[in-house]
Image: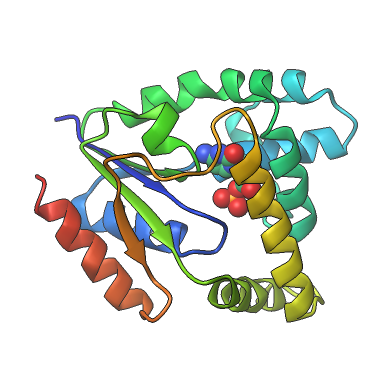
Length: 201
Ligand code: C5P
């Protein structure tokens, strides 16, 4: 059985949490595609050429510590604007999406570019302030000393770069279902996503 759920949206909107929970609920495989760009960026910060880094990604690159820091996130959004970097990562994502047993992918261009034929497309959003607060809590728990105001500024900068790039910009697919998680708890957001997907199975 092939069934693809595409989940896109800006940083810290709740995509990852929802995607993981939805995958567990339906027994689907889950791919955090942001990790592909973060692992590539990590190699670039180590001095590697971005396109060579994307082409040479190995499973162990996703296990590296420090991929979820703000610094790697910013670097990821810069190399993610390079068409050749994106092209090097398409094949893996598309294969993952069509694996037998169902798949959930979250990212920025899953519904628009990677899986335009996905059975379900969700575009998850939340207000800038709510997203900044969530990301600040995450970073603080990971012992990154940052102010919430800095997190908000960085988030806006990264989203603007992701929205305004020429190749595969962050935007909802025409047939995406919008889910604004601003006023929702995690459980409420997951329950809504599960209901939206179940209605299309
Ligand atoms: O989702 P995450 O914050 O880990 O993504 C890091 C960066 O990788 C994003 O800001 C974006 O520039 C890039 N990205 C992308 N396309 C995806 C997933 C992530 O361009 N499908």
